[in-house]
Image 1 (tube, rainbow, N blue to C red):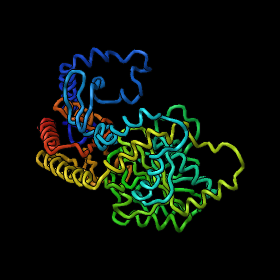
Image 2: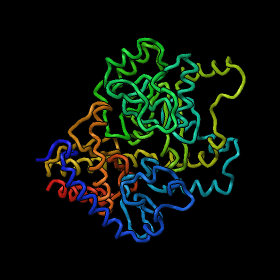
Image 3: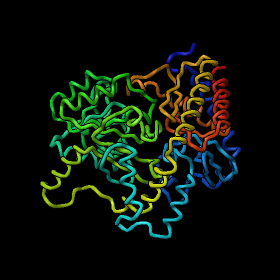
Image 4: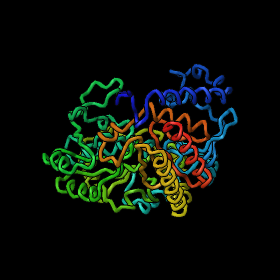
Length: 457
């Protein structure tokens, strides 16, 4: 008899291992050039990879890419993959969108960085304000930087020490957001390298959708800012309860707490993100990853009221370095790529296509799950879709963590790659881009059905 410890996502671990081993062998056999090129790693790089998370892909070794275009990747063995990972949102609008590629070529001959604005910058500020609704903006290079800078200013203008995050959140590598509830108590997120501080000392952490806990946590009037995604992502996806965001805004205003909405993943919802689609009213707004069509860039915006307080703070603070910067941020390559993305790529027509195909994917995956009677479900926010190997819907980060099925998810991932489909490696996330076709969606649904059948047999 199989015990509950021998089951993950409703599937016996022995069956999962059998699938993973078979698919790993097939993966190796199909990619002799990648295996020879990668070997035990790339010479000269620590751990054999340029960035440590490249070794976290579930495949036996990373796919060595030859080229990518639109919604496809071709590796050096000549194998073409329908790409639904899209750089984990960094290429959400497809690889090398033509308007962005043209802007990069144009700017390449005019200088890549000079610490000064140019003609694209003159246009970009107005574009950001019109698109996302907040009147004043700053540019950074990653969403981590943008979140870090915005939180610094939130503390400065409120003169409050603490921030609040939701359990299971993800805001890049911002130190103070690396806090989790462990056995019901705040603690540093497990696995942090070299972190010597107790981050829970100045960071409150509660469960998403828990309004009673939110009221209690903010009652002391010592929290500068609540930072949250509109939907918990980068894990098993958690959607907000009806009325959650309205109550979150009401409670933060009542307690004088600022609200930062991080749209880096939920920009899949609409050209103005989840914030525009659902009428959210944040004090601070952060967007990274796809805002420049794949060129590293991020933005953070502020309400008029916050901007007034920020200016007053700057006028009153002692002279000296603010601790916010990075020399290569706000460079002309970012300006050019961002302008092209906002004007020509993040269009209503493209988002309509993305939403239509995402709904098609959601329905197809759900049908496959039902056909094989698997205890799984599908979640979607705009063009972002996830299959979750547990019953749902999930309501908070604790439930999302419990729903994570790493062995099962890894086996499914490799099996999908062998059937011509690439999804995100760290969770079961799939993105629809403007370049994604209905045939690609159908191939993903078909491949998922075949893998589900092997697991449920």
